[in-house]
Image (cartoon, rainbow, N blue to C red; front, side, top):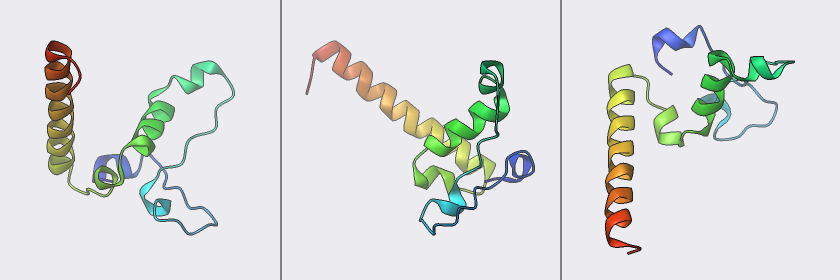
Length: 87
């Protein structure tokens, strides 16, 4: 995780040693539905759902570039399939 968000989100340190262990962030505990909609909770949840290759990037520039390329490719494939039908 790159520097600006390192202090905002806390790394998940579980007792089990898994390959995702040091690449995940801890979801903050919330009591109300309002708390689940906060940036702090949603940001951690979305980050944990990213593929491992994105979570392991330490540069903000490379992270942004990789995500943009990934979603552009996904959008391109979705658009082609929408117009032509299933491949």
